[in-house]
Length: 68
Image (cartoon, rainbow, N blue to C red; front, side, top):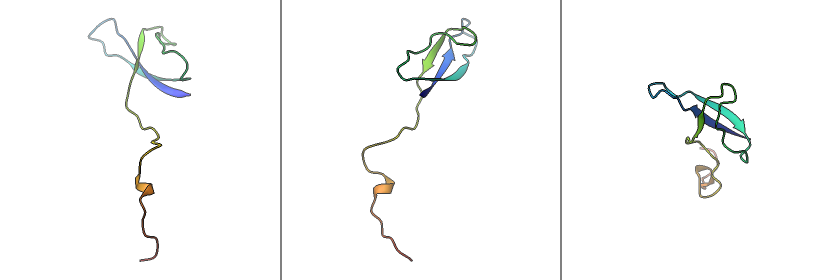
């Protein structure tokens, strides 16, 4: 299950959108209405931290082990 960020699409351009999170399966389509209020919403793409499964990292650099 993934957590997605959604925001409302206000009818009044002066009104700020409200953001909230929804836990969904990745295979489910994006929501178009807020489940609580029925307002129109859109999914927001935000940066995140994911697992890097390739390349080198600080943990794979060879280091000397021993006492100083």
